[in-house]
Image (spheres, one colour):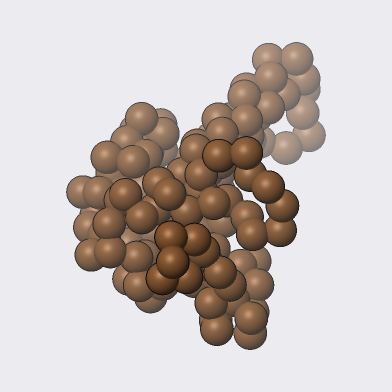
Length: 136
């Protein structure tokens, strides 16, 4: 079973950027719940899971993808703040980082091991794609 400590170890550097303690904990709790509901039992499973089943991932796993999206979103937000100081809206870095970490959390319910060393779409994934399952 994937624990809060496991999630903190996977995303610790990025979680540390979330100043709001409640949001940080909810982000971790959401990942733990997704892993539990999706039947994920180990960090090794998560690190072998492809980030998509729709194309060749060229070896990029789900965790690597999540980290890259999080860092990309953060870099874009920081660039907007640097080069557009008079934005008509505020950028909440806590939300940007949490959003990056959580953006594909529904894939924990959409994808499952196929029992033969690969992965397949789960029953849940056939019923609702990850943007829906991640939101509910």
